[in-house]
Image (tube, rainbow, N blue to C red; front, top):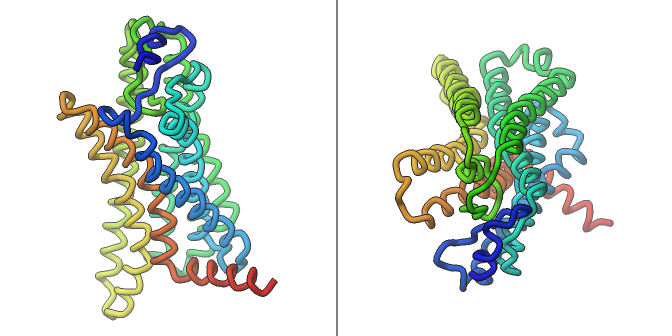
Amino acid sequence: MSQTTNTSHDPFFFILTGIPGFEAYHIWISIPFCCFYTISIMGNTTILTVIHKESSLHQPMYLFLSMLALTDLGLTLTTLPTVMQLLWFNNNKIRFEACFAQLFFLHVFSFMESSVLLAMSFDRYVAICRPLHYASILTNEVIGKIGIAIICRCVLAVLPPLFLLKRLPFCRSHLLSHSYCLHQDMIRLVCADIRVNSWYGFALIILIVVLDPLLVVLSYCLILRSILGTAIWAERLRALNNCLSHFLAVLVLYVPMVSLSMTHRFAKHTSPLVHVTMANIYLLAPPVMNPIIYSIKTKQIRQGIFHQLFQRKLH
């Protein structure tokens, strides 16, 4: 505690916060966090390896899934260093430059998660509503362009507020309310006019956090209309099953995202523990759950994992 008091005004550092009220139990709390990070790294690495090794999985759906796994891996590796150093070693200091770098990658990968899920919903729409044109619409070249567009969209969305924030003076306490650096957390420590940042943040919420889920919902409405227009029940169930993994991944991302936004908006004065817990669920749930969902619900991924394991045993 004394470390935080002495360095909360250090001009070269921000001070991270662990689990409020449970600082004495950080070493025990680190055990589930370590398990979550391990599951995320191993799970997403396995998905990437299987898709890379199995030529039968070099299809649009699985190429988009590999993008999602890369994004989840990036999100995990971005928060892991500061979270685990705080829980294991009680090291709650992070340099200004490192904090801004973490902020950049954290928000880029968060926006990429949403963008990739939107691209995957388009993939499911084409596969179900226009199956005869699927191969001609989603060629490798088109998928590559979609991937580049996602990266450009997310990087260009995050850079302006980052540069705006870096120019502002931090003359208040440098104590952050999470164990990683978030824009909305850092901006409250600024003692200057932040209207430009606020308006830009509002525009980002509209263009990404609101627009992406709406487009995903629209794609599912079109998919449902197409499925219900099919007379054969077996065809309906097969089409719904093809969408199930993606639908669960959408819920895993957007339910915590909406819950966190609602908590910040309508429960500002609730316990800091609630805000920290919601933020950790939002950042950890997708990277941990996505590989589990796709490994269990997608037969081709499951078969690819068994095939790779069997090959290793033979060698």
